[in-house]
Length: 152
Image (cartoon, rainbow, N blue to C red; front, side, top):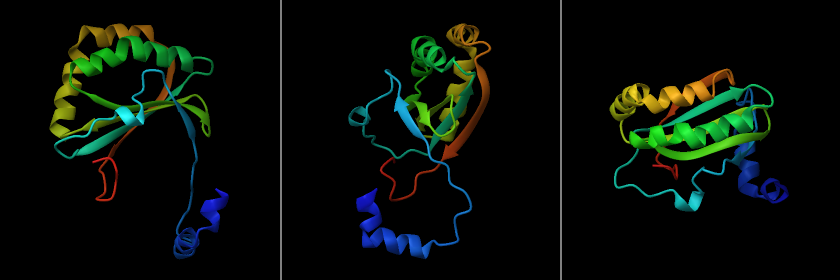
């Protein structure tokens, strides 16, 4: 951070954006054991239509069990139906008791079709039963990559 604040390009960026930012939230996240490592994220022949960021708030004391259950029971269901996990992270700082996962979708139609198949998969019902009562809140965002994004 010291080097970043000493960089003239960063100073110019900050000056150019003075007064434009209303709010900022920082989070440090730790990848789950089953989260793909950055070096293992594959390259794709086609660009993504969108990425999906899901943020789940978990009951205090339940985040480890929730993540382990997802890794054991939920992730195989998503993978059976072609979903591409980019990362699965647990909060260290910032809002507590949160899990953030990121998925890649080559098309929004595929996202919808695979979602219906996931919901119909008996493994999804088993996963939900195993994690019943642990989830407090969830939010999902569809993210469309910019031209300069390393995620395409």
